[in-house]
Image (tube, rainbow, N blue to C red):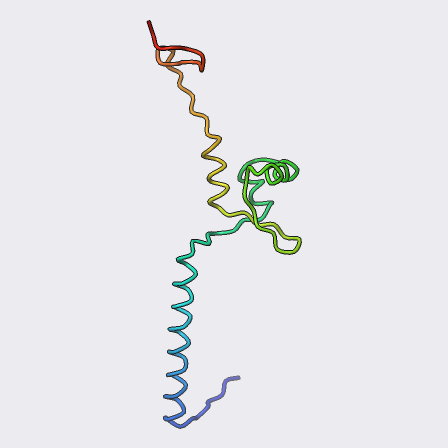
Length: 110
């Protein structure tokens, strides 16, 4: 069931003006906080899925400072950037070309 509401044009114009002011304020707040680079947050389950680890391992990463986190009451959050940083820091690039492969103790070729 719908109904029709009639208001005076002056009241309607005032309402539109307030909606526009509110819209501008929301846009300013969005711009302000977007520029803070707060980033997307992940919960522990999501991080465990991404890293393919158990919750206990994730706790060890927190305890040893391997990954940053935020805690609000009893809920822990992780920034996507921190998870990405952990992955990049632990990336292993294998070189299967035996002519260019070196171990850490090797000196320059003689």
